[in-house]
Length: 502
Image: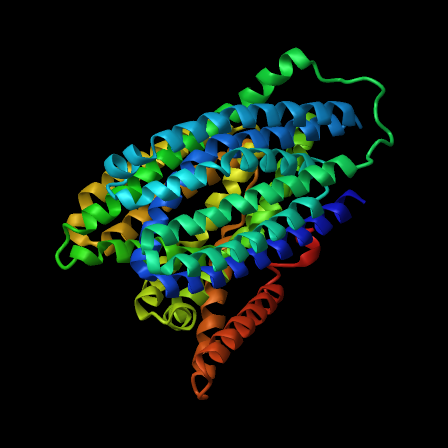
């Protein structure tokens, strides 16, 4: 029964995640066509501050709520789970309001002295409004995931995305004649409206929730220790992501500045930055939605198994998810490498974006494995390790960016991404294997899947290029045939089976 619930929730989050990513990519294509690559670069500058400010009110507290609620629900103690949620919301609101006032009051200073572009000031003021609602949303989602109810978070995110796009579609078109400053402000107005309505939706669902059966008659959670326990879990996660976001904001500021020092950079620096951060990377990360939902659901599962000291369960879950992530990432890496230029032309009508996708494709496995390993470690109470690793990685990236971009331009930035993902991927995977005592067959986990992925994709692309298909048909057919052929080949080599995964 429990396995069935996990698969059902994974399917719900995967489908909703794919829908959200797909809508998001289409939206960014539309937005890029409307405001151009310079506008996307300006939006990305503001968005980096948005991520930084929202980190306080979301990431760590949401994970803490999920883990503590999962522990309480393992004893059928819904009363304690709801108490955890209330404390989490109060803590999120407190931190979010501090972030709101800081961002609203100092928006001009941040724009002029930190982002070096005063056009971001309006966006910062507008985005500050969404922070308290974002914090509450993350806590509600954490609670429902601990309950193994993925539907409310999934519906709320789809609802949120629809509202966001609807408001932005109207607002940006209305502000076009006022320039990029007003357009970027309109984008963040859509974000604020979406967060408010999503929070209201989740609150209504929570009030209507009638889960009362098989609960304890008393609370097993000590209220005096609850705040401290929430902070113990949330602090390293939030601090790590906050410092990481801060350093990534610094990165987003210095990348255009250092690109301008490279030969031929000049005024195109912000456009190059917009192409890689706002266009190429979202496409490269799009398939990871298939694995992101599983990573999210692993937190309560691993937390409960660890609380019950079920080491064999932890080892089994981790072994399967790491193998699945690796196997899936190789085929996407091969598709991006061999079809990158066609994908860039199809989606953005830009050969330059296609070239960037191709250049980023070899590190796709590292990106996906790093992301899933990070989620696993947080579920196993290893947030202190991920905190130290993420901060050291961001410091490492910024130093290399500062040194390499004036000499090598955009290729220098891509090289830094290679080193960064290799660094975090290696140490996260090493920590996972040591913590869970997992071991992997290199032949079945690496050698056969990588060889099969590139062979299947190359064969599919070569055969399809014999026909004069339109780009959209070529890309679609090549992707579908490559994936199907790939998994059939892995089945033949006894590398992959659905039964082994689930």
